[in-house]
Image (tube, rainbow, N blue to C red; front, side, top):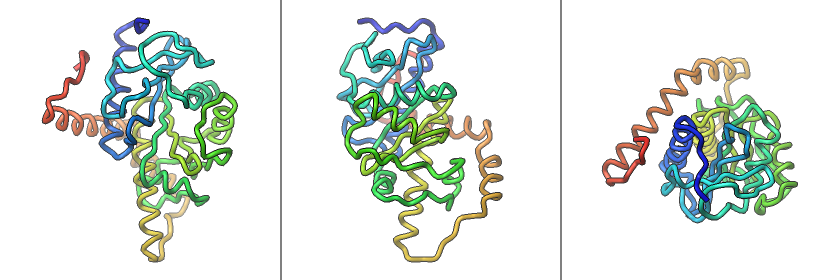
Length: 249
């Protein structure tokens, strides 16, 4: 089936989403051909999801399939990820969101094996309006609409969730927010686990200071700046490797 992208703006959005996958690979989120991000279709036909059987670093703008909210493939070529209900059910439950990511980054996946609350010990931890919840229903694949609904309920109004002994989910209104959320979650988990392992006494900043830091460190202009930085890093790497960056280059 040909990919049904209706205009250049939507194609650009998929191009950005493909780059988000490759940026996440740079930041340690790759796990063979596992992990996937999605975008709400602008015309409410469903969800654009990375096709299966390719790694994050291999994703380009034509590597997406369009699913309706029941998981039926409407357009695109390739295998549907088994955990497609993560994306359909979270986006169904959260009309304020447009992007969903599920990956298995090292430190955050280790953190998902605990029941600890993530603390805003570093600047990255201040991204979150509250500790990301732990989804405890199963450590297995979230491969049914009911499990996806359970996850969406656990996520609530938050920016991310830990999947028990499995990985993470990060979300955003924009592809920038989704990507940075996943990156910062991994960094915050790494900081907390390493600091805890050190045995040194540690405390997070007071709540009012955390809220102030969130506003000061992550305004819209900073989010744009960080996204541009990661894209420059990606361009340098892919330029060195001679990788084709796609028609929207």
